[in-house]
View 1 (spheres, rainbow, N blue to C red):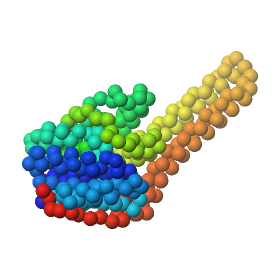
View 2 (view 1 turned 90 degrees about the vertical axis):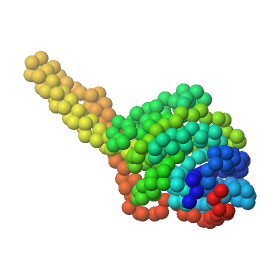
View 3 (view 1 turned 30 degrees about the vertical axis):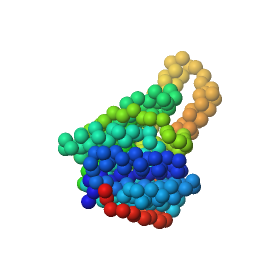
View 4 (view 1 turned 60 degrees about the vertical axis):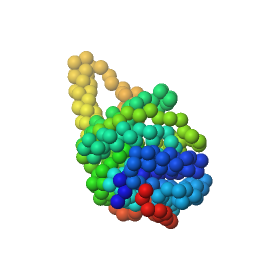
Length: 311
């Protein structure tokens, strides 16, 4: 069993993957650790798998090609399922997370922590809108979550073997890994890091992917979007009763005529909008249930190989 298994999910990272593999291998050897590197090609179209395979004669490498793009969460799970190390390090393929921080993270791991995760120290390179949306997402996520999910936590982390086994035992298909990392528990600590610019290429996480991931996180770890409609419905009912009493009193005391066309029209549109929103929220949760009951595998492996023994 090697000391460390490096799991590197990659999607269209042919321009980065070889350099990443060399840097990871050099750092592991500098630290005197036996290791293996597992690259998971998440349905790339640019030759990422072949670029990784070209390094197989130089480092202990396992490469997995998924049959299509299943998303980073499932790619990480595929890599974890193929890992054999006493501890597992998840690392992105774009070199933004400096591997030089591995030494300080291993130092915390040696202190008895079972999970050591990287936290982004600052977001100065992001737009103000993205910073606001990120902050709002984590606040919404922690409102009703049964376990605290650290804000700005990266997937870059070291996990003990028993943590990995606990993660692999979870049966759900729609995975939000940042939430699952927190849900399984174990002794954890954070290490702040500064991200570097990408060596080549651009981020594959556009607004659409981030939005879908946010929805998965909210529906997987909170139920307040469902519960809030009970409160909204009760509040509207109370306001309706109060308004009805006011109309009756106004008519009895002052004898005022109440045409009410504008009021009724506004109320119909307002309540109709609320009903559509609430149905949409329920639909999101039902779609997750529908996806789970089909029991399709989270990922399908098209091919894989393992070259060399752990160094």
